[in-house]
Picture 1 (tube, rainbow, N blue to C red):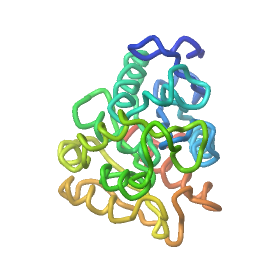
Picture 2: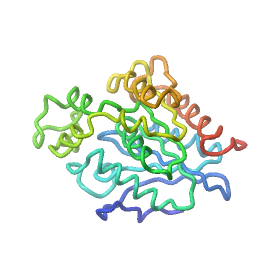
Picture 3: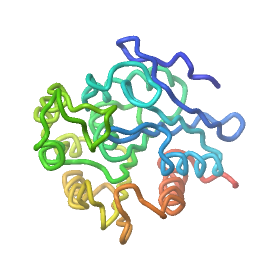
Length: 247
C-alpha cells in the first residue's frame, strides 16, 4: 500500500514508511517521533519490525517540517502535529488503528487520543507530559528566531513553538480523558524527559494505564531497542489491538 500522497490540512506532504502485516489484516500502528526528529530513528524502526513479525502493519510518520516531509520546521508545534495525526487517521478509514509516539510525539498521541475515538490503543515511549517545563529546561536559555534546538542547525527555535508549549503547559488533563488501553514505557535514566512525567500521566489516568520502567535506559533507549520493541508489540498484540498472531 502506498501513502505517497499523504498530506496535512495545509497541503504539506507527510513522509512515511508503511510496513505490511498479515494478509487481509486491517490492524495498523501509526508511529510518531519526538522533537527535532523523524521517522527514521532506529528505535522506531525496531518497533515497526517487531510489529511486522507479529503480523501487524505499521506506518512510521514524519510530521510536517521534519525529515523529508513538506512544510517548514519553524512552523512546527505540538498542536500542529496533533492536527497532522488527525489527517493521517482520516486516510486510514477502515483500519483498526493504534498510535505509538516517542517523547514529544507521545504528547501528540495523548492530546489526540483524549478526543478521537478512532484510536484503539496508545503507546507512549519516554513520553513528555510537562511540556512547558521541558521547553523551559532545554530551550529556556535560547532566543527564538536566532538559536537552534538541541544544537541542530536545521531545527531553529521559533516563537510559535514556545507559545504553543506555554499554552499546552501539560498533557495531564488530556491524560485523564484517555479511555483506550494505554502503555507507558520509560527509562529510569532518561536524561531529557524525567520518568516522573510518565508516573504523573498514569496517575492522571486514574491508574488505568500500564507503566513499564526500563531500568537504566536513556531517552533514546540506547542498546535496548529490541527490548523496547518487543514489550510494546507484545502488549499491542495481546488484546488492545488484535489477538496475538503466529510469528
